[in-house]
Length: 322
Image (cartoon, rainbow, N blue to C red; front, top):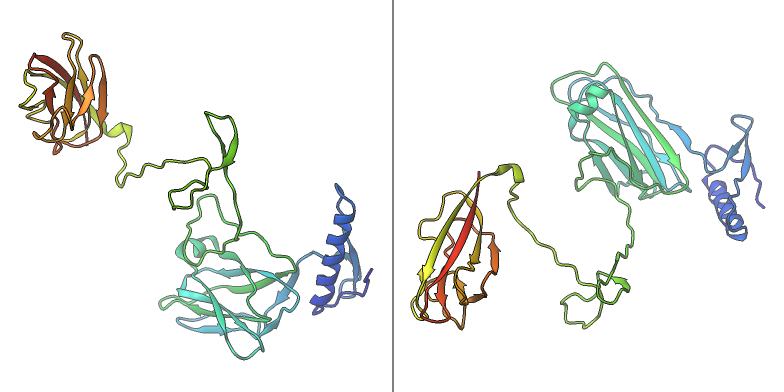
């Protein structure tokens, strides 16, 4: 086992020790091995997976309006993730926190941008994690254009292992948010066969694959239950198998949905449709006592036509909201 002492810039040792720890864990299922090494900087035995605090040079000092702080390059070979903590009492410019990456400590090849918001400034700090994109990293910070800082600090914490993205429970997701790539399979039970299968299979992509199908209804504008304020009833009668009748000739303004029922006061089938062109061959069939709910506003029509020339009465309920 490699027990070479870890130095402040010896990320290779940390990586090799981590690999040895993973091999030890694999060899002893159900147990966890924690490797220790002597740290000459502190004179203590430390967990080789512990984080390494990195001081930035030159030391940050409070910035004036639009002033820019640029740190020296840090060599983070052997590390995978850094936590970035910014301490300040005022906002930065938009994307004023610029984490820059370089393969040689000179040429910038990539950036991670963040903004210190008013909320961050009120809290006194902003923290986030980033995955390293190159061996060398530095911070370029630009203060806002209206207020001088009273305090300013910047701290890096390097880790040898990648971390999952973290945020508050109500944190806002944006294109610059740190993310962890995962593969996921969601299974569901077939109510008919009782078997479990991948619900992402069996889609209408022409592949012919089997699996559970999931129907998703999408509504651009949701109507909360609290916004449904009243309802209205009515009836209409049709006595022809050739001429359709408008069941709701004066629909209520603000209607969200309506129910249509073929009443049991007579014993004949009727057919309904959205226009007067409905026929017994094209309409939706309602047997005696059957009903249907349609989610449409007052601009939608509902026409009815009989299966015979005898009278049949339909009832309706309109649900009105704001």
